[in-house]
Image (cartoon, rainbow, N blue to C red; front, side, top):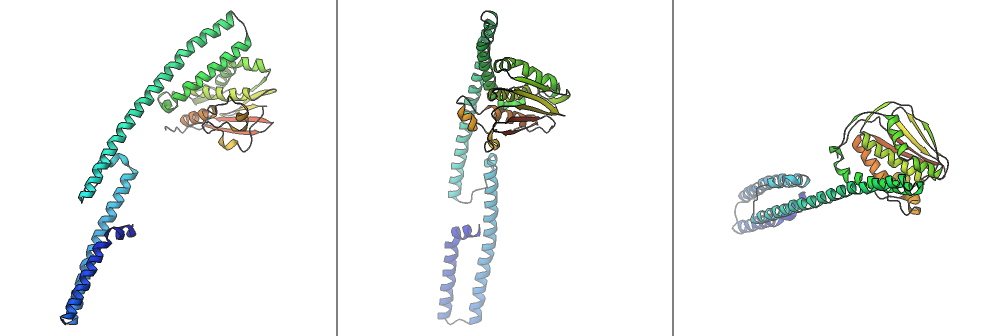
Length: 323
C-alpha cells in the first residue's frame, strides 16, 4: 500500500524537495546565518512530515474502506465522499454499472423463474400420458418389457422435476419420523419389474427403526441409488441392510474405478463406466449429494471394479444446511 501511495503522490513530494533545495541555494547565496538556514529547513521538513503522516493515514483508511466495499458490493450506495472531480466521476460510473447489473440480475432471475415454471408444468403434464400408457399396457397389452421401458421414462421425468426444484428445496422440506423399512421397501416395490427382468435377487436385512427425515426427498435419493445399482448389475443380488440409522445398499455389479470415486458426486461426471454407457447423464448422484446436504444427511460410496458397489446413506446427521 505504501508503494502505491508514493506512486500516486511522488510529484508533490518532488516539488516540495525542489522548493527546499531552491530555498537552501538562495539562502546560501545571500550568506544567511547557518543556524537560521538549518532552522528553516528543519521547519520545512517537519511540516512535510506532518502532512505526509496525515495524508497517508487518510489514504490508508480510504483504501481499506474501498476494500470493504469490494467484499460487500451491496453497500455500494455508501461510497466514501469524493475528494476530487475525478473520484466523483468514477463513483458515478460505478453507480451506473451497479444499477445496470441489478437490472440484468432481475431480468435473468425472471427468465430463470419462467424456465423453472415451464419445466415444472411440463413434467406434471407429461406424467398424465405416462400414467395412461401404464394402464393401457397393464390392461390391454401385458408386456413387461414395454412396462419396464415406460418406468424408465417415468424415472427420468422425476429426475428432471427434482433437478429443477433443487435450488428451492428448502421451501419444500417436511421433517418427520419415518419408518426406515417402509421407506426402503416402497422404493424396492416401485422397481420390482427391474429385478424381475434382470433376474436379480433381493437380500433384505433391514432392522426397522424410526428416522427423522423428509420422506419424499429421501425416497428419491434411495430410488436413484437403487436405479444405479440395477443399471450396473447384470447378475447376482442387491443387498439392503442397516447399522442403526446408516442404510447400506450393496450390489454385485461392475463397480467403479478407484480413480473415479472422488468425483462421482460432481455434476455431469460419468466416469469410466459412464462413458461406456452412452446414456449416462452424470446427474443422479449429483442430485443425491445435494439433496442430502440440504437434509443434513451424509452419503458415501465404496466400490471396486468387478466386485460391486456399496452406498451408505447416513440419516443420523441432523445439522441442516440451507444454501
